[in-house]
Length: 358
Image (cartoon, rainbow, N blue to C red; front, top):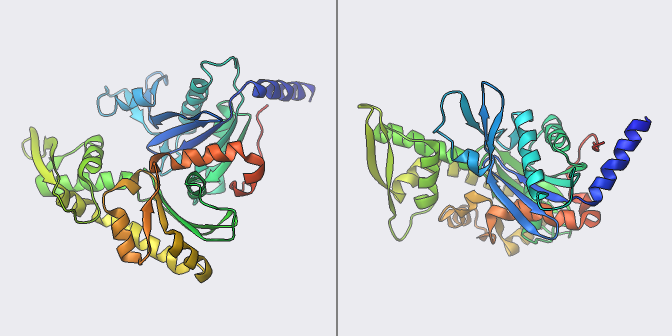
């Protein structure tokens, strides 16, 4: 007992020299917000592991460079799948890397920060616990969780604690979060496991079915970013699609345009739009009138797909706008919560336990 109290006392002392951080723990990218500094880290959620020794070789941007280019015993993997922890130990190592990177230039010998982490709104208690345990094991003094759509709404400076409706659609890498928020809580929400990664898979399938071309996921993502669209465009965009011919096994290049990529990702876009419509149908009419004034807010990397705001507006008869810098919305929201923790404690996700690092 005495030992545990000593550990707790040291943890609090080290905590005074630590920088509290907000983390957008995304399937594709992890962003880290440091109190009073802003976003200081934006790196891919990728870890390269040597399967022979179990040693972690690289994390973040360095590991991303290895994807698809490693020998068989080295695997560049994502420890998060659909926004939740799939590999606890690797997630812990990744979080430890980011926490230590933030404190590298400070005097904190053993960083013990408070951490606010954005998570998908549809996760289970077990999945919440995995995130908190990973953060605490990585060195956090205390870990708080917040639903990603709530964090995105706070990052967009929406009045989430007022008695008025705010609708946020956060399209990330692994999940799409659709939520109506009022009085500091989520009134209606949907969490889909269809988002940016699924669109990349759609492009890979399209290349295989239409051109007998085998594409890498990273190539598909580059094509989506460069010429992907959800609505017919005024000016045609083109880009070479390079991969391996499935018939001859030799390299092959095909020129594709925005219309073809729009056709490729249409299925995923349609599911997202249909779920936005269903969420609107479930929203109380008093909140709908507020949303019609403010509009639906798009956040996340998927919100940058050309014409998506126009398509959603056409399908829902609602004004839709892409928020400023949608890629960093959740991270900014976690940072604002950190800096106003006493005022915004009510917006944090409920968990059935409270865990503090000793």
